[in-house]
Amino acid sequence: AKGVCTDVAGVVLAHADRLPDFTRETEFIALTNDENYAFYDGDLGSTDGGRWPVEEYLSITNEYVVPHSTAKYTRHNRESYMVGALARFNLNHAMLSKEAMEVAGMFGLKPVCHNPFMNNVAQLVEIMDSLVDSIGIIDELLDRGLEEESGEIEVRAGRGVGAVHAPRGLLIHDYTIDGLGNCTKANCIIPTNQNHANIQKDMEELAPAIIDKPAKEIELTLEMLVRAYDPCISCSTHYIDVNFR
Image 1 (cartoon, rainbow, N blue to C red):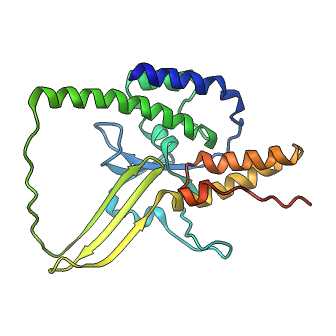
Image 2: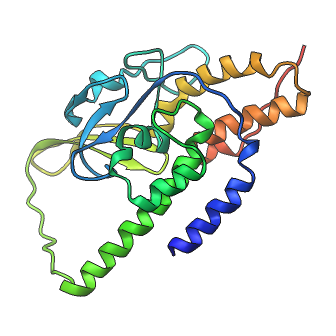
Image 3: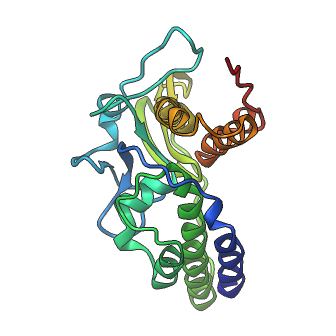
């Protein structure tokens, strides 16, 4: 399996020169902990510095609305921040396996990387790391066998806040439950919403830099930028209709 991933990395590397050399310094936010490459648990961390319990997510995400969009935007220390594989890599690279870091080295990916197009490379690095981790988990299960787990649930009132990483970035869920088990309040902040402002800021800086390129190349490059963030399917399948004047 690791060999297949290395082969895939080689194929991607053959086209790496097509990745735009574009950087715009921004803030990256992801889960982080002291034990592993955080996907499922940890605190909220920032490349600008700082670490906070997940329960304090509202002071980090700071959702707001803008006149030109029905989607909410987020911001923390700056006008925008990025979540996703590149954010995880920038914060947690020290926890990656040797094999994963070898893939990163193939592409010259080093922290802190501010090129959003390298998010897809960071995803490839994570695939290798997950393969290595999966092999270890499977071997452990084969050695000790499966353990029975209780499915019993006791209904009680309370509030729960959790954060995990979907492949495209930080996903936060916040639920309040009453004594009957009914959800009386819910708040979900998804990765694409957290990336909206950062995508816009990237576009505002990238567009003037490529304005002298042919129209089709400009459109393709801007579409590549959006898709580099791995947005949800309703966003990723659209094309950009640029009105050249």
